[in-house]
Length: 544
Image 1 (cartoon, rainbow, N blue to C red):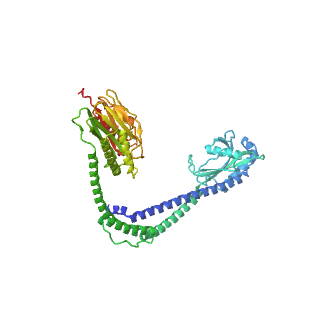
Image 2: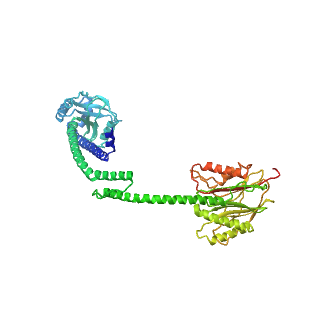
Image 3: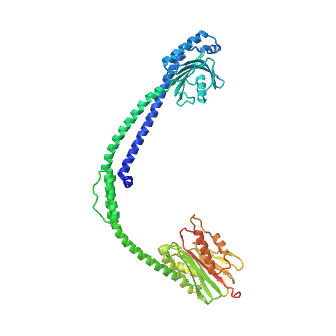
């Protein structure tokens, strides 16, 4: 068994075995093609010779007297003609030589006029048909050939019966038309000749082909084996052994050098030599890169912590304030993200709400996000409307924005005591508002241009009146544009429907419900964008 497995895995044996198989296949194809060509040529020749036999025999028949023969007239002429046909069948060495008159209404039957039998040719046991013997045509092939001859569409027709169903030996039948003085076909001369002559000629031809192919196979396999071993297999085996050694030891060995005169094999050997040098260098570099990657990973972890700590993430955020409840979440697509939210008290009666989405992802977006967040927070504490604050931030961002990044921002200032919310939108998503006892609906506000996109932009303020029990839901485009494995998006419509499944829950319950819905929708598909949500509720303290 070990020897068998070794032979199967040996390149030499597989290559030589494949070569032997191809040579045998080639010999088989040559034999089949040669046999086919021989048979076709022999059939053509056989049919032509048989036609000439039939054409010669036609000269013995008086085509004007066919109906007289069948009616019993011209008795002496009929007998003389029958004797001549019998002698001709013997001399031509054919099995049957017969004349038939075909029913021209459908060519499906015929009547025997003359029938000469020579059973000695093929050890057959044919019986002569009597004059006037009627018989149906053997098959459709015969019918079509009868029709073709009677209608002068062919000079003669031949049928090859290699496997007769009636138990007769394989034979060929050639039919030649017999015409009267007016050129009308009145009968058909049929010559049946056994195929034994073709078989006798075929056997030595096949044996000769097989012998020649066998000699060619032996010669080609011997020469090819010697050539392949020296020129291909041995050099490749050297390359294989060196590659195996290097994989096992991971250390550079002696160069293979010049091992073949063929470029492909020599290039392979040179590639192995270069690979060993490159791999040793690569391993050294990989060690250094791995260490650098670990350092970068550690720094990214610190950056993620810094970013997370820059956003308010302790809830409840204002435990001593019963007038409102707030909750927010930021889930970055990478280690650090470009989305951010913020909320902070400007004074005891004013709460600032911010949600934003920076173009791009990763570290550049995170740095841009940190700068923008600080600018918004600091400028908001100085006073002014959201539109004025966004205009200020836009000017400062544009002044130092060589990377041509931008950020969409929604900024609102809520007067806690009255529920009046003044907001401004710099290209961000529309907020969603819930009115107590009703449902969440998209609030179509007026959008200004994105922050960082163009200097000198002005931003419009608008007002929303929130009442006790009302809720405000803010989000980034990572929510409606979340995609599943089939590239289908979550959509704003699905978001609104899901929000209305959680109308009675707290801001935290709403956001956690939305997060679960998005995760269930996305499934195993990778997260391509940051997901950020913020929800604030005006509490009904009287109900408490």
